[in-house]
Image (cartoon, rainbow, N blue to C red; front, side, top):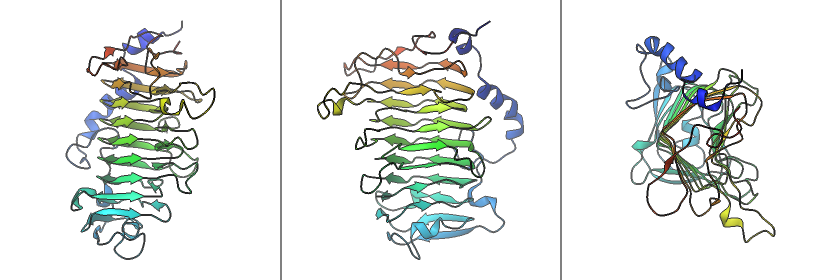
Length: 335
């Protein structure tokens, strides 16, 4: 007998069941910081090495002693900041494993990294908080603003990622190293994917079988599509998705149709077990006005538990979103 979307949304998904089963064992572990949540909450950062050290970022240079690039180049460092401002990157920055980045220590308005990527690929057991990454269009065709392609036990908190040329922030295994697992992105902004290549996208959140990702309390804003596109074990909780679509391009290209997707359910080969709980999807000027649900492209292998998700596409200036129905209209493509 086929399992319908109604019965699926009324049971706890595999991600939720796994969390319950592991809760007892997890109680003895130390969370990354007060308020850390999700599958990546036990990331150790620099505590994961025998002799951690403190590295103070003392300048806004692209490279060299005292730079952020130098600070995150070696594992076992707690990175703090004596300066704030804009770092104009000349090449991508790779964050090492077992690093703790305390961006909240930067004075003034904090630190912004502009012009190239800051990548967490391979940065297992890393904690990173309170940074802003702005890729931009100069010589960045096909690049994401940030993300990771392998690594486990990573938590990113109070981050801001924007101006990606492909995706803004993605978790998508490259087949190398440790497959992404136990990752949390929380309290962060993922937005304003650039339309220069007609590919303004929030991100791919795709893990192989067993890889777990939590997206909690984030804002996805002004990306045409993939807000996000999900495959694997995932929890998407208390997020706001606003103003997806391509309404700003309608006059630029002849016969260019109004389109765009908020949350894409699967769409790639593989089984997904997903909790989608208490999210608010708000249409904006870019969003196609005829959208009846924020969800699209479901497949028979995308198993979900959905609760408390609201859709608000009437543009009346009020927060009066309506519950997404537990059927194939609300969650299309699920059989």
